Each structure stands twice: as C-alpha cells, then as structure tokens.
Length: 317
Image (cartoon, rainbow, N blue to C red; front, side, top):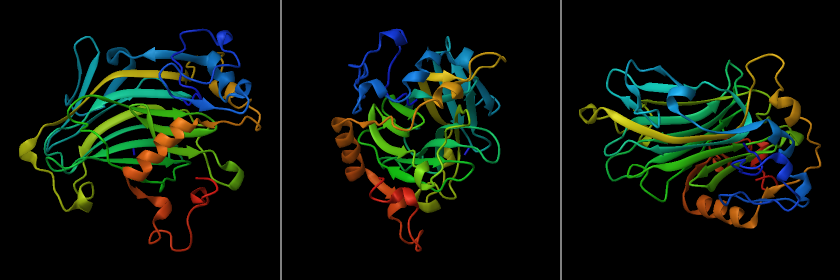
C-alpha cells in the first residue's frame, strides 16, 4: 500500500554539541553503542531539520472529495470513509532516514471492515515502504495493528499486534525510526518491531529511495476483520480517524539542484559502526512481542513450508 536517526533527538542543539557521552534521547528512547563516537547516523544530523508540522503547509489531501479535512489553523486533520469513498493525504516533503511521529485517534465503535493506513513509501513499481495499518473490529473488540516492510516492491514481512490500550479513546503516538542500519516501529515510544539491515546475508533493505508519509482510510471488508467474515456496517458511517502533532526529525530530500543530498552523508558510514537498542528498550520490545504479537511471518510454517526467509533466523532476529 499504498529516522532512525539512531538516536531520537529533537535537535534543539547543534550537531557540534553532541559528544561521546550522548547515548540517550530527550524523550527516553535509548541507543547503546560499544563506542558512542560511532553512533550511526551522526554524520547525517547536519542535514536533519526537526519539523512540527502544520497540516495546511506540509500536507496535501490527495483524494476523497471533501472527506479529508484540515481543521482550524492546521493543527488537526481528519479522514473519513463512507459507502461511496474513503480519503487520504500525503506529505509534501520526501525523507531519506529519520524519525517520524504522528498522533492518531482511530475510528471508534463498530469499525469492522475498515482499514486506516499510515505509512512511508517511495514511488514506482519497485518502491520501498514501511507500513502501519490499523484493522477495525466490532465494538468492544480490539484493533489489529498490521506492520510490513517492502523493499523493491516486495513485502510479505507481516507482523501483527494488539494494543495495550484503546486507540479510539484518545490520541496515541505512532512512530517510525529509519536509518541505514535498522527500522524500528514504536507505539507511544515503546518499540514493537525492529527490522535490521541484513544485506550482508542477502536481505534487501530500504536505504536508497526517499519516501513520503501517506495515510488513508478505506473499506477492506473482504479481508480486514476476521478474514472477511465481518462486513462493514454502513449504518455506522462516516468512519473518521483523526491526526495531530506530526513531527519529523528527518533528512528532507532537497527540491532544488545544488542542495546537499541526504544519501551522500548517509552512505558515508563505515560498516564497523555497531549499535543496538539499550537493554531497557530490548526488554520493552520483548514484552510487546511476547504479550501482544498475534502473527509473525517468521513462524508461519504453512506459508513457508520450504523454510523461512533468511532474516527470520534466530541469529538475526
């Protein structure tokens, strides 16, 4: 469908102020490195500009014939679905590596059959993509959070989760951190999934194609809820999802020739720059995956009877 900065920084200080002692972000997302001086992505920080978005200035509603709305002074955006059409928007800017945050409040009540998609994607048949999709359900039943990573047009790396809260009662922050080493999916700053760069064993990784942020709401009652058994109840329409507090600490791809390119700095990182989530974040990731993961392509023997994809190896998980 349609960063990590290895550290999650709001970039309130200049890059020159970062020293070897910096291994923790302002908001508690940690990165542990055997040598803090070699934190990944540090070379690209000079190109990163933090951006608290105004939806009027930074996004285009691309389809829906009025079902997508920017409210007030551009601080809130809503997307709606009825029996005739859904709606969607996209960012004006393209990014190559960084951290993307958005607060979402999902469709309340009986949302069965609906999908709210929130994802980064490049363009073309051989596109890269980093997906959050929220699959609706009957009233009182939990949403399913569907995640996927596409490289060169190929996905099939699905992991699905429940949430430990009601995503329709209030806004919650859904984030993607993306750098040349890894992709991390986060919910309220808790990591739920990590997809590492394993190009050394032949696994493709999205690190060359800039991506825009997209979101949409649409009817998928052929498959979205209990495999399509539960259909959309159009008497509940319109179904509305709300968005606020978008923030991009990311490398913005230049529009004008002559501006420095994101990839030129990002690709100058030597291969010996080790890093990983710190022990606290690793424990949070394990907690989510042990208690809230409901599907993992890496354990689906019916789907992969001849053996799992190489990234599923326990040595690389």
